[in-house]
Length: 261
Ligand SMILES: [Zn+2]
Ligand SMILES: [Zn+2]
Image (cartoon, rainbow, N blue to C red):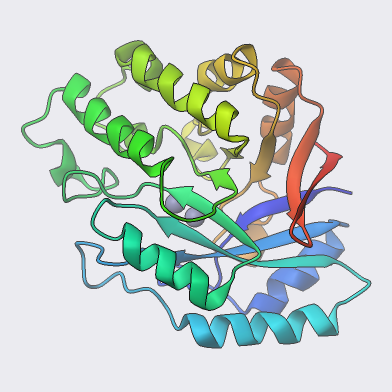
């Protein structure tokens, strides 16, 4: 009995599928807990990627929690894309909706998203990675409560170079990991890019996190369809085991719980 702590449904601009289908798939997979984490990327530079109707989302989640009570634990969460410009708005959003779980992610740095080629134009690999990591470091001091650090190393997912984040800026990665440990935040292992051979954070960063005293990892498929729930779970589990961490940390009923990895 385990958990998937990062999924997107049609309440996210890029998600597909009815939330109930995810719940049914999670029950089929015998999960103990599933965390819905719809996108909230306020003031995102690309207006076509709009945050969904979060009032409708949280109301829908309340209905599903009641309907499936006793069968599976459901968290109604958000994946909040942090920028220096939107942090105050994010704090207001959290105050308004009181999500059960918050992933603190960085999708935008220096006015663009490293998912797209234009982010890398005019930047050396060192600069591209540094800009992203500095934004992540900033995000750790977000003026609101969050539970987990999302897909650390995201900048390399579509990067036009092969250098690893850690090889380029071990200093900044260590600073981020040290702060994550000091603040007691969960570091997610995001397996959504695994088809391209990459888990985020990459292996060397997960091992470094454990070496710096980090003990809280969680599994995150980042599924955008119900069929992708728990995809590449084994990859995350074996990396966690290599780091000496045999349980994952999930937030259930507002409290951190240890579940089998
Ligand atoms: Zn994300
Ligand atoms: Zn996501």
